[in-house]
Amino acid sequence: ALPIIRALVGSERRNPSYLGLLASVLYGRGIEGTISKEIVDTVNQALRIHPDEVHSLYTKARCYKRMGKIREALHYFKRTVTVDPAHLDAAREVRLLTIRQNEKGTKR
Image (cartoon, rainbow, N blue to C red; front, side):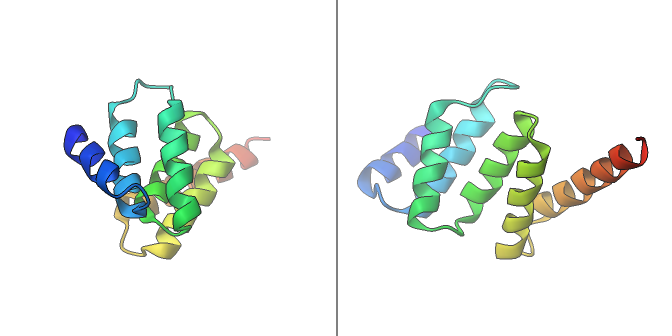
């Protein structure tokens, strides 16, 4: 899939949907715990073109979660659900992270 998406991005460099898909595929190929500069650049480029590009919002949320930045991750998962209320994976992450934050707050 990666060569096909790279070709699409090459033909339409300013298409936020193609950039979002590319970021998503790159994220899936990443090593646990790491976020490549290419993923960050691709997500940011897509969101500059179209701030509500769903794949990019979701990938940005996943990147923050992978880096352990839960507050930022939760923000972008919520934005993903706001843009696409049917995005089940993002909605699940919102529920899980909210529960974890509440549990963490009650342990203090």
